[in-house]
Amino acid sequence: MAGKLIVCATPIGNLEDMTVRVVRALKEADLIAAEDTRNSIRLLNHFDIHTPMTSYHENNRYEKARELVAKMQQGTTVALITDAGTPAISDPGEELVRQAAEAGIEVTSLPGAAACITALTLSALSTRRFAFEAFLPMDKKERRERLAELAGETRTIVLYEAPHRLRRTLEELRQSLGGERKISLCRELTKKHEEVIRTTLDGAVSLYEEQEPRGEYVLVVEGRDPAAIREEKAAAWQTLTMEEHMALYTDQGIDRKEAMKLVAKDRGIGKREVYAALNADRP
Image (tube, rainbow, N blue to C red):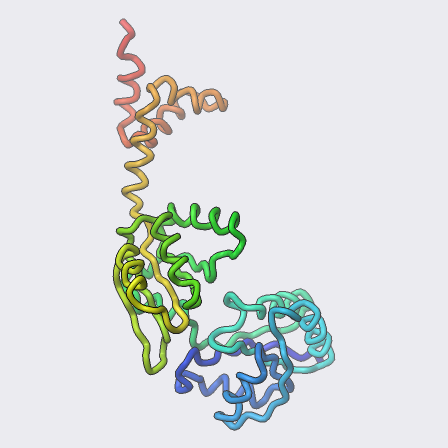
């Protein structure tokens, strides 16, 4: 009989956020795969959990995942935890989940704390649509490309950042997204010194010129206004004559009637106006 994998969310700061269901699952599992057993032992001791632990982290994620899958195929039930929050979210646990699923192992997830969702709900920014980016890439070229993509993102953006890199990241966001863009800086979530700073990117950069960043941060940044994007695109189309604009589509094999609809949409005008402009010089 095959075992299973249980993805267990643990507190991101306040131990009272541990769910009864997760405590029971950790006690009943055969083995706990923990990101750092030295950190997790304090959590387990607090809840009187004595299940054996094994280390599963970024540096052994592939090989150890194969070992754990083999154990589960032999009937072992493995509970996966991370240092804080929900495993597999910007976390090596995603590899273990992938391998287990591909091997046909039953995978279940027990919900609980997640820093990205906690910060989003505190941000006072739009929560209907959001883009979770976790940590920006460290590679300079990839980082520039990602920031360029985010400049046009209309959804609310959620990022993680460490205190020693916060100033650099805020400055890069300001340069790419504009200093007037709203941001909520959420730090030490659920802990004694929890703080949410709601300002602009200009304000955030100025603030941390004066004070030292402390604690782990979740940055929630306002998405770009879709209306501004439409206006910008419409302005760009105005640099083309109507015939040049039409040619962009007809040269692709699109019939003239459909091309007129597309041109009208691009320019934010009616199809009649496009027709009139195209036929203005005709007798």
